[in-house]
Amino acid sequence: MLFFDQLIDRANGFAPARRSGRRERRYARLLLAGAVMLGGCSTMQSPKWMRSVQNRAYRAVNGSDEALLTAQEREARLTQAREHYQAGDELFRTGSRKRRDAAADDFIKAAKQFDKAAKAHPGSAIAQDAMFMRAESLFFADHLPKAEQAYARLQKEFPNSRHSDRCAARLFAIAQYWIETKRAGGSGIMVVNFTDEKRPWYDVDGHGIRVLDQIRYDDPTGRLADDATMAAAVEHFRQKRYGDADEFLTDLRETFTDSEHLFNAHLLGIRCKLEMYGGPKYSQLVLEEADKLINQTRMRFPDKVREPETREMIARAAAEVDYRQAERLIVRAEYREKRREYGAARIYYQQILAKHDKTPYADQARQRLDVIEPYPALPKRPLEWLTKVFPEGQRAKPLITTESGSMLR
Image 1 (cartoon, rainbow, N blue to C red):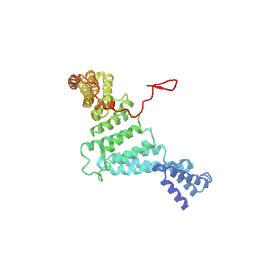
Image 2: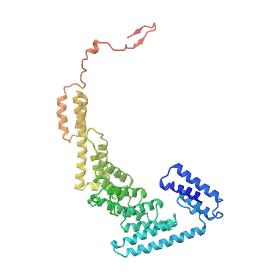
Image 3: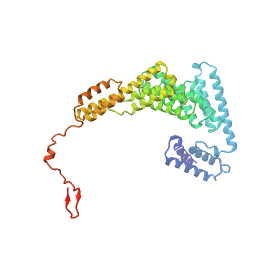
Image 4: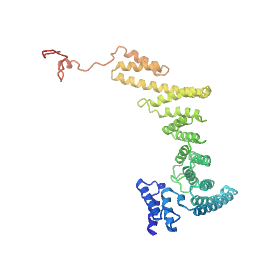
């Protein structure tokens, strides 16, 4: 019996819930198969100690051993889960009748009872309710990091449950609280938090953004999915992480086409792309994307674009894009001029006059065109006469070969 206990304990250490590798999961399955075979492949005919080994091995692989329980064992577990749930519910109600600052102990005790109820009958409806109430108890006890973990675990084990919307709302509130705490400067001077149960150990706003991102993945069609996406984008923008903010805003525009945040996602997306632009010596892709986004905003929201403030904002953004594109052309034209490649420089100056004539660079382009007009398109090669004096290194091939074999050049 001790040997089997050691094997099952080792299998529990290799459980998939602990992110085990393929070899460890295979080892746990082999232990399960051996335990079932030794028990005669039937829990009804196996002795009590063998059923215990089977249950522990099955639980190590699948997280639950419900398939191996007898009817009496299932009923006993259900009764135990109900007792713990009822005890937790009474404690929760007691705490709800007290002031918030005096009810923390009752909520913590309730969370422990709900945890026992969930573990007594895993995978069942009562376990689902118990996990939710445990998370609620931790939330009202102001143990927010533990509450966030409890809500996330419930969303993972029971996706699309009847508690999904409430879990998303609680997670959104927790994330907003952490972000606002960091923004208000109330996170303290210590890098690591050891005293406040309301905040994570470190990186408060980073945890808040992570929770908002997780809301989108847990329930992408939920009521708060677009709100979480927009909130995460705004926080990234506030922290000047424009690339991350642009990723969230792009996702919102492409995924949540009926969101109430769609117009603001367009405006903030334009600003993000302009902030991401690195200058005339870098890629112009973000400028082209900003220009397309400006045109899309004007086409999709004509009513809002007519508002004076919005119209002025978009006009300034369009003028900035125009200015940056003209700046890129003038830099390239000046580079060609320094190399005396006046033909290429003329092309760049002409593009400025044709596409960006309202920018300050248009006057500069006209002046330079007048100056370089008499110059040749390409510079003369230095010491060109040397190529005529010295022959080429390789002999030229003949153009025509006659029938007699003589070669004509």
